[in-house]
Length: 301
Image 1 (cartoon, rainbow, N blue to C red):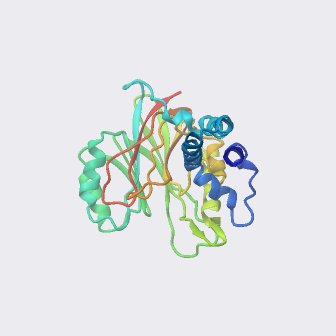
Image 2 (cartoon, rainbow, N blue to C red):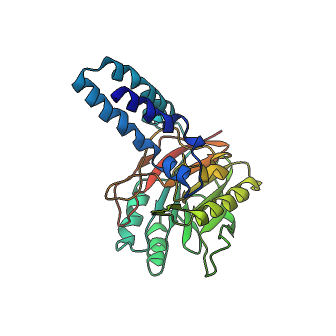
Image 3 (tube, helix red, strand yellow):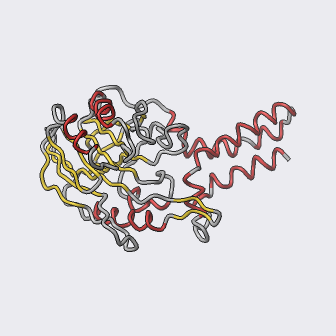
């Protein structure tokens, strides 16, 4: 029984793309929690050792190999410190954050070149602007998202990633060109719609539609180098983000689970890039938000 369970546990890891997304977007739901599937082989390993089952131990090689193939690289150390061109931070600051000044100072103290923020609402927005201004003289805010930069910003514009089903005012994407010493970089900051897990499955149609619109905007971007910072309400394993992951590099080192702060279950805050490599992703200490900030070095190709 242990050996059979071990073999079965390898199936969703090795063949998760074959799980249908209808009904209930079960494929996306599975992929969002896929890293946690590594707990199953660990439990089975303990049972196999307790039972002294050689057959179960051999069978466990299948899920262990599948998990290592998918996620083992995230555990490896990153590049040598200093071997990058800039550093980026992504943070959903939360519209219920009671300490925006402390949040802004914590992000600035990490020393990034770029800071992407979501859920910026009055009066907290003015606090972020005032607190970050001394070290980040360039910023662009559209709707509830914003970008702060040490480098000059030009060509700021709103990103049209609003799903057709949302009729009220909704603006959660901004694009700007950051003029770094090495080259101009098109920086995108986006906040995709939230998802809900219900008895019928994953309710994510607005998020999925917004991801497609964001993917089209990135594909049409004329500036060769792109950095995307955002709360995408999805993990990079989720097929719903394929419009982005198919054309942008994702971090190959670091789990950096970012949500929720109390017990992080998934990394839904993302840093991705085109014509650049995102280094080891890690989280920063908690702020007044229900998300953890994520930070990563970026090396231009």
